[in-house]
Image (cartoon, rainbow, N blue to C red; front, side, top):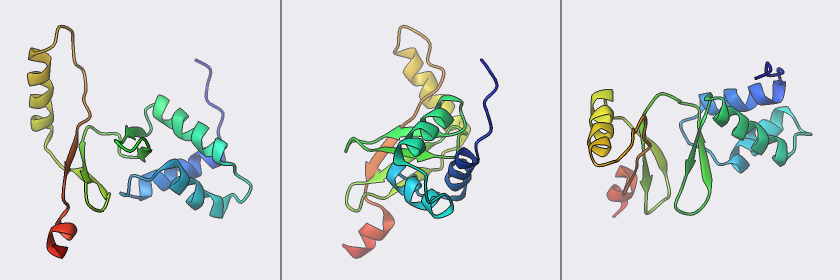
Length: 131
């Protein structure tokens, strides 16, 4: 594969993903990066998010509503989606727990599982307090 040409816009997108724990949509990334690059197009943001995902510098998380979220944390971890307010959070499990889930899944699969992405659902603590 040819060397990837440096792009200030891609670096700004990558920096934004690394600076937030919000798991933004492409539209949210676009709104933030547009402040620094007023002429950037939404298409450029989508292409760069997909490129960052392809080269392992970001994670794309498909959600039940059909919108993709993006995460700058590429180390193995799981996510939580609040079914009341829609908050999308990192779920901190130790690596031993993730490896055990992968092992259990692999035991039931005729193939080889090398990684996983799990999305847990429920109510976040803020929504529980409001109830």
